[in-house]
Every structure is written in structure tokens, then in C-alpha cells.
Amino acid sequence: MQARRSVGIDLDGTLADTTSRWTEIASETIGRKVRKSDITEYSISQALGITYETVMDIFKKTWQDHAAIRLEDGRIPVILSRINQHYDTYITTATNASPEAVREWVVMHGIKVNCEIIHLDSSSKKAHLDIDILIDDHPDVAVHAASLGKTAILIRQPWNESLAKSNDSSSIHVAEDWGHIERLLLRELRRA
Image 1 (cartoon, rainbow, N blue to C red):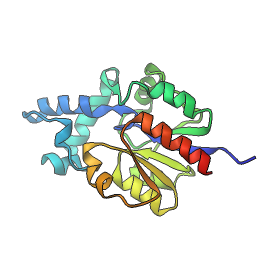
Image 2: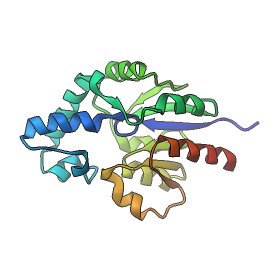
Image 3: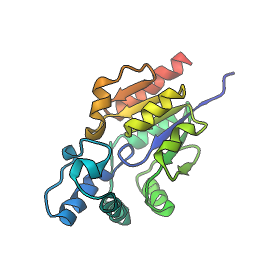
Image 4: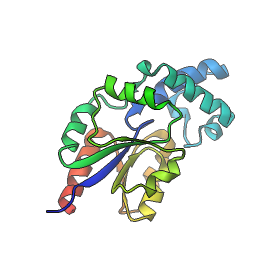
């Protein structure tokens, strides 16, 4: 019998819709309306012309009120329960939220992974984890994972649209939503 494959699932922008809350706080902080569609690069500071420190401060404020953060897709708990039947699942995150806030948010939304939550100090380290498939919104994570022979599922967001449109790697799959992610993972099972 073949060993179960593993899936690492990103938090911000993949499971958690932190961007909606982040843009509300950013609009108040910088004094102009910020929309999710304005964030056309993963580097929010470059996309919006604000400092990295301001971006990170707004993320801290976003996670301080983690009860206000919605799911990226309301179907995630049900889809993950089905994925957990076939894969070892992890949450892999480089968020600046406290581990306690992340755990509380995960529990509050009924998200169950059958392994653990892995906190990293940099997104670039995700591709080096002993995980077969990474689901993420960060284009560099997807490219790095693919370069190491792993499968990446990039959930489409305004900040990764450039890679989503130009991707020609057979190791990077672009998903429109969580239903699409589930179908891609089931297809990966058949190929294994």
C-alpha cells in the first residue's frame, strides 16, 4: 500500500479571507479606499505605495480581531473533511498572527486538518517542508515548490494573476475556488 500523500494549506488568502478585513483597516489607516482588486502584486507595499511596516501593522490589527475574518470560501470545512480522508493535511503559514489567534480562528470556523498547524518565519520555507502538495496564494511559493519537484495549487487572487495567466508549468495548477482545489486533489490521487 502506498503511503498517504501530504497537503500543506496556506492560511492568509487561501483559508482565511484576511484581505477583506485588511482592506477595511488599510482604508482607515492610509486615508483612501483600498479594495482587494487594488492589490495586483504579492508585495502589498509596492502595489499600494505604502511601507512594509504599515502593511505588517495592518495585518497585526486584522488578526487582533480574528473573529471578523471570514473564510475564503464557505465550503472549506466540508471540502477539507473530504480531503482529510485521502491526504495528511497541514496548515502552513508565515502569518504574523499569534499561534493562539490562528488556532481560535481555525476552531471558530470548523476547519479540521488531520496533522498540525506549522508556523514559519518566511513563506519561502514552505517549499522545503516534507509535504507533497502546497496550496497557496503566493506565486513565489508555487514557483519554488514546482522547482523542487512538488505540486503546487495556486488559488487565484488579484496579486497572483500574472503567474495564473502565464503559467506553463505542469507542476503548478491554478484553482478558481475551493471546489476546483478539491477536484485537482482528487485528480492527483488518481495519478499517484
